[in-house]
Length: 210
Image (cartoon, rainbow, N blue to C red; front, top):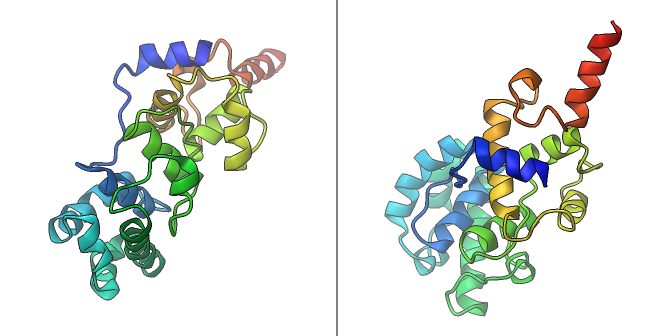
């Protein structure tokens, strides 16, 4: 696919910007990242993961103490409750191991398909399509998808993305969305995908008709 190849050339290193050492840390960081920047999450989790080092530690944690640490991430009441409860469920139902499938991960409190896809892709190396805001917006502009609904966007992308490249493709969309295809003002002139992007081509046509 042209988009996959172009982004591979532009961003050779496709990595998740959330910092983690073990699987449950990525799971928790992704939950905290909802409506919050990855940069802020990485600051907060330094203290969080220093205090609670294992899934069992989180499962036994005082929710109010977790709230105090994660407060800078916003929506801290819900996020703290989800973190503690997801770790309790992992201890009770999965022998203390983060499950390795989207189906099982989405049974955990606070875990949706975006988080589940990120975990199975980055931790377990399985084909994943992480439909965050960057992915949805840019694939819509490219003409690859036709919806702003994350679940529907994932269903539209899975048949057309090479499974072994899909996870890295989504990471590269995040990098591209931050650097070039910004939400308020896409830089089509500086985009590596301008030659086959529906939005860029439509802007070029409009400019030519003006």
